[in-house]
Structures are given as C-alpha cells and as structure tokens.
Image (cartoon, rainbow, N blue to C red; front, side):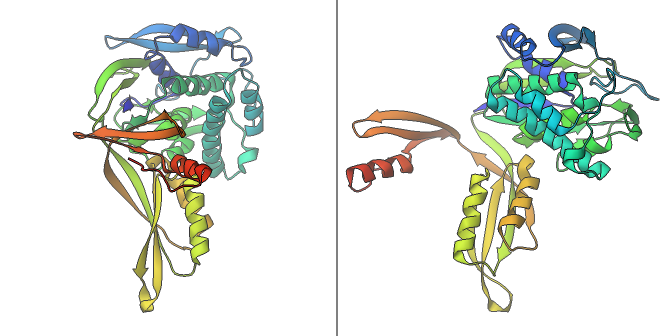
Length: 394
C-alpha cells in the first residue's frame, strides 16, 4: 500500500507542507509551471533550496505582485506561514470559492481546496460566534494562502497515495499576532481544528502550527500516530523561514506499507424506537457519506425491550462529521466512541474482460496470504442480462 508519512515535530504550515511534498515529485518543474499558470491573481511560485541545522530542503517561495509575504513578530519569533498582508482586505468564503472555481485545475482538486477552506471557516465561525458565510478571512484569505492550499491539494492529487499518516503535531508556545490582536499559541482557530488530533506544546516559543497547516492535515490524513512500518522510497523536507534550535522543517516520507495496521473510530448507539425501514435508510445514507462500514446487531435493552445496536466505522479525521450524521439519521440521543486498531490487507481493484463482459476483481494480499474475488454487483448485472443464476464469485 502506497503510504505517505507526514512528520510534524516542528508543527506544520501550508508553505512548508507544499515544499516537502514537491520534493517527492520527479516532475516538480512541470508542477511548478502548472501552479504558476493556475490563474491566482498576481501569484508566482518558485521552489528554492534552503538549509536548516545542516539539513538541505526546499522552501516554496510564493510571490504576490512580485513580493514574497513576510511574517510578523510578536514577543517571540513565530509563524512558519506568510501572515503579512497586502492591503489587509477581508475575504468571505463565497469570494474564496469564486477565486478557486476560476482556477485552471481539475474539479476534484478545486473541491479539495474549497473543502479545506470550509474547515477553516467552521473553526473561525465557532471561535468568533459568527455564521460561516459571514466569516472574514484575514491571513488565510490572502492570495498567498490560497496559493499554499492549492499547491498542497494539487500535489496530493498527483501523489495519489492510499494511506496518509500524520505524526502528533508540535504546536509551539507563547503568543501570536494576528488580525484580531495578540492570541495564545495555538491560536483559537488552530486549537479548534486540532480537536481529536494528537498535539503537544514544547519549549519552543512561537506558532509552529498555523490554521492552514492544521486544516490541511485534518482534511488529508487517514490517521494520526507514529510512523508505520514502511519501506521508504523518497523523503522530502519543507523548510520554514524562521530559525530555531531544532531544524524548522516538515518532513514527509513516501513508501510502501504492505502489512498494514491503522486506527479507525467506532461510533455506536442503541436504538429501540426506529422501524426496520428507517434503520435501513440510515445505514444506506451513512455508507453513501463515506463510512468504512455500517452494521447492526440485535440486542436486549432495559425493560426487556428488543433493540438494535448501530455501529459505524470511520476514519479518525471524519469522526465529528459522522457524529452529526448519526444524530441526523437516527433517533439516538447518545453515541459511544472508541478508537480501534485494525490489521488490514493491501487491496487492489482491477478489471478483467470475459466472454460475459467486464468484471471488476478485488485482490488482497499481506501477512502471507493472497486471494481475489469478483465484484458481486458486476456478476449480478451479468446474471440479470442473461436471465441466469449468478456466476461463481471466486
């Protein structure tokens, strides 16, 4: 399984993450050219070499109207990310969406960029008590921030990995200056985005994890934890502009992870006042929303009432969304949560051509086993077309 590990021992910011990911790409010059031709107003990209504590890496230089953004200082040095403002204009989510939809990139990548901004908008909305559509983006609404997020989303689509694991995130300490004034580290919006994500504060004074960085890893991560057992093929270093006692870098590692163990969130609720049809509908909707699995178990509840236990498995970073969906589609008033470690086989899907038509085949391997199975829906389709019994799946 193609796996990307993102190491955030010095936090994470959009420009650092994008530079690190670009180091993994053999066609980085072509990607940089594509980035510069996206059509972000006044923005150009350049990948420059940079050294921190004797380690060579890259810095993604984003210029707006020929000038690179310069971060501001508070009592302590802070911020990986560009936070100085050209003209300090306010931008709403609809303005961001209009800019992104006008860019020369695939629709799927545009949607990724917009989804990352929606996470930031939700965080700002919660912190400031303002409707999402009324949020004024300050630093993250500038063209350089749009450029950083677009760069990460574009490179992620090019890498096309199966599994993304992110380390616990070092957030830094002290204070940070922003458009609203002087705030503690992590800034409130960053802290909101990091809910449910392993993070810690060390003895380094400064903002190591920015809202943009937090939103990007929250959106793309399959799970959070230590580096999995993997055969590494490429390593990338994305450098921040500040100098600290530790190398100010985000490190990414790309490789193969065949014998996989990851973590998933298990959400469970008990139901005793829904019809079978209603439960069936809820199960279908939860699967359509991207749950890894949804299943029911018959149980006996208090007062000897028969009931149903609904179990939903989802990625750790999707937990909050599925909590909302379970409350939306069921009558439960409480949900139990647990983190499960699971062993999974490497899965590949291919299509074979047979006299009866094309059939998708799922191949799984790992832990000393290998097997394959034809896709049921394709076999059922052929059976209906031929008005015959279903074909053998093996």
